[in-house]
Length: 112
Length: 147
Image (cartoon, rainbow over all chains, first blue to last red; front, side, top):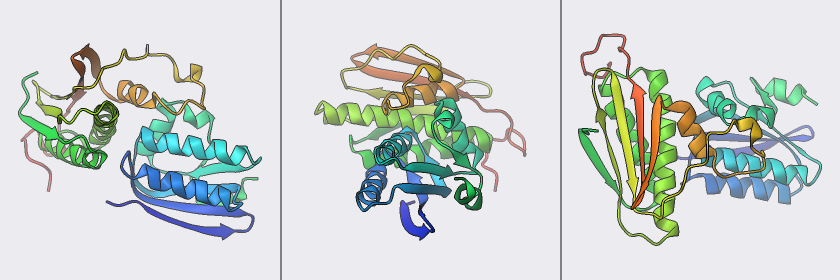
C-alpha cells in the first residue's frame, strides 16, 4: 500500500490528506511535503489521517517535525483521526498532549 | 523461543513493510484477534525499523533476522536480531517526562506499551524478544484464518 498525499485550501487552512501506510520507507515523502507546504507559506495545517492504514513512530516523528516547523512561523498543525488503532499510539507516546486531535475534518476546521 | 518461521531481511527500509505483512498473516493463522494483530503489527514495525537502521548506519551488509510463531498455548512470539552495535534501552519512563520535541526513542516506548512482554538483550548486536497473547478467534482456536 503506497502513501498518498493530497492538499487543498479550506479558507485560511491547508488540508493535507494522507492515505496508505506511513513507515520508515514512506515517511520521507510526508516530511518533504510538510517542508514544501510550510516553505510555500502554508502555516495553518490540518493533517487528515482518516485514510491512513498504518502509522508507526517514524510517522509520529515526522508529524512532530511538522509541528515544530509551523510553530516557528506562529502557525498550527492539527490532526484528524478517528481510528482507535492509530489514536492508541498517540496515547502511549503522550503525543495526545502535544497535538490537537479531532474526530472529523469539519470539527478540525471549526476549531480556531 | 522455539520459532516456526525465520525471515532474513536485507538491510533496506523497503523490507519493513514485508516483515509486517508476513508476521501479521502468521499471527492471524495462529488465531490472534484482529485488534491484537494491529498492536503486533506496530511493534514488529518498530523493532524491524530499529534493526535495519542499525545495519544501515553501521555499514553492516548482513540480513536482519526475524523468527516468529506460536510459542505455547495462546502466545505468539517474535524475535528480531540485528548485528548492529546494540544499545542500552532507555529506562521505561512515563511518556510525560519526555520532551515532546524529542523525535527519537518513541519506538521503544511503543514496543513496551503494545507487547504483553518484551526484553531487550544486548549481545553481539541487539535481540528483541516480544510476546503477545493470542486469545481465541471468533470461530475457535482451529489454527485457520477466518474467511
